[in-house]
Length: 476
Image 1 (cartoon, rainbow, N blue to C red):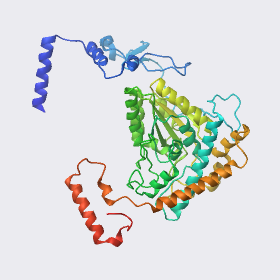
Image 2: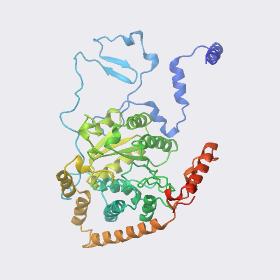
Image 3: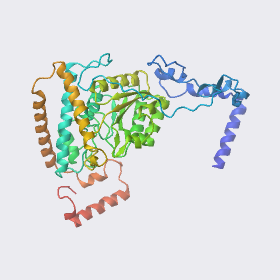
Image 4: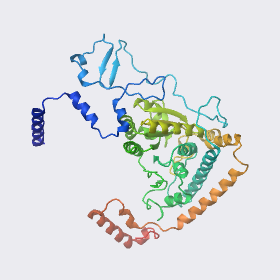
């Protein structure tokens, strides 16, 4: 290291002696001119000062102080001065000793379009949804409910090992998916199968994954509900919380560099915002101006941990502002509000090349998963109130009925049809052969390293030696 440093110093000294001294400001300017950024995004590098108080569609990024403007009195904090010319933007002085309040007097408002009875609230601004899209949204919400119910029952029967439902959060799934395009990249958590359903993932494909058979795209190497589809731009679900959030930002930045007319969208729960990945991702997205939409399902519970035991802030929406990200709080049980918010967020992300955070207030009516009994930490009365009074599917259906778009008996017929399809898909998935044990070692290395070759050999020998200890339907 010492030798390398000494050589580096000599190289720099030689360069300066040949080229003459140069100002830091000109070097910095030259560096920015040579950044590998498409010309279309070059204006963003100027970081103009823009007033956003009365112009919600404008872009605020404080102008950096130029190095050559700094005087010897830069660090002399004279109370008589009106402004401190500081890197990152000018800061006004104050003679008053005052701390920011830890919380506002009034919580951030929640954007809503439909009331609890499915009626448009007077004065609402929202994106119009035509009959065809509305009926498909409602149909997919119902399909999601039926699929959840049957898979949950299948797990209780011991036919699959694990499952979790989206009951109470159907609007976030379907309405957000309807507002996006197939080119947008989806980085889900584990409660967004409705997004995949909307994009065309079949009931049979869902069943294949949950049963981990040979037709499963993950070759049985993931636990149930860890779906993924390259064709549908839906990245495979990962069990660890929040790991998908910074990945989405990286993908979004790539879309920006390639000038794609698309954005990345990542979903996560309120518990995910307590992870470091969430904070790193928001800062990364804000600084690099990545076209990514963050959608947080704030359902009040991170498994058994209530919101008030997670953080003191006003939910999640305020965390976006602290990182310089435009944010909005939405009624997650209002399909029209979710559709409108995501539609607008997508336009902002792509047209303005910036991230957007959506906090969707909702409620997880079901247990966290089949491994959980939520009545141990919340009352059944609370659960039933949300199920009956704030059900997103019922509210959206009431709005459709008010428009005269839903035929009598159509919903019951659809539910029965989906149930039959689901039962058939499960029967088929159960009969399909399991992936070979050898698949445990594929798809990571081009050439399998020697240690894995040895493990593969030992595993096969063990299975042959103790055949009764391993499933008979799994090929060696």
